[in-house]
Length: 468
Image (cartoon, rainbow, N blue to C red; front, top):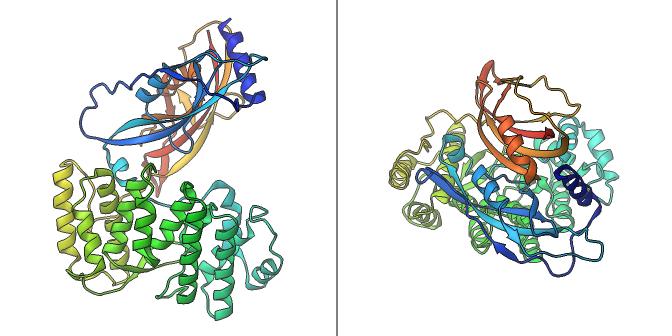
């Protein structure tokens, strides 16, 4: 009977819509049991969507695009809501909730507090196209742009092409400016707008365009007013304005009190403005110029550095230190690191040790750049290939009737191929425990980077066939 009930619920998820009327009332809220994780962790909040059955029992969760640790998943599965039903008796409810999260402060967690753009999967072909375009082909695409950007993402391809080729005359600068303006007005949530491909430098080649920078600043301020609660718009606007107008960027982010990435972006903006970064390289996004060759104790940049150094928000400060270190390495490589940075870095490290003595971050540009843990996606189960994973103990089996399901996890696979950390993204609660326990028993093929085995962040798409 348990199998039958689960199968009915699974089919309902595909066929039933969330009720438009009154939602269930939360009756029992269970807090996560963090065990011995009482120190050395980073507090966070995770937005999740719960699918609740008419009985008031949570059936599944979805934390996309984030993930949640095991104690949170087990707590959410125990939440109970009031019973509800309609005439068919097959209604499910979608409940949005924000839950507290603790993550152990490990090097990759510290480094990940700095906002870093990642291309959306749907843009991969357009980015490849942009890297291979010729001038005649780019002109052909430009003259026949479709009304919608999603149709081939040709505007994305052109932005990538311009970033690689450079903009040598006013006509090309205008073309690039017009493409970005169209995207902001038409689709400000477009992932490419949060990248360096869509940044225009007011000064500092390549791609300098003072008029364009001023125009796009206005466009982004208008977009934020039009979409005040859209996280993607806020991220893209902050990415552009942290160089073009850091005061405006700070205001936009500061006003979003409930934004989960608020502290991350504040630290990032403080770092950019504190070093007075005035130009970034197209494509790579690396800082290439500052407004002064020396860090002054007066002025706007000094006030941003003071704000960062006075912050007690660990998430914000980790972002600020990680960003400052990355910017310092990039500026030093371009012989543009301002005089006085060494003293500023020393002050940053002193404050970091006061907030968290065990921190591994460094803002020293002479330190090697932290190795960014690569990401990959593996599908396990069903008819998918298992050449990337194998059970450590293939003899462990249970007998009974199979229950199908699909779940998604985010794992940190260490250099030996073992699951070092596992968090849940989405799927049915009834299958979570068995799936997560099974994954920890699997051995994965390690990731090879520059002929060296390294840890990797891995999305695990699990087709479950649990037996009862």
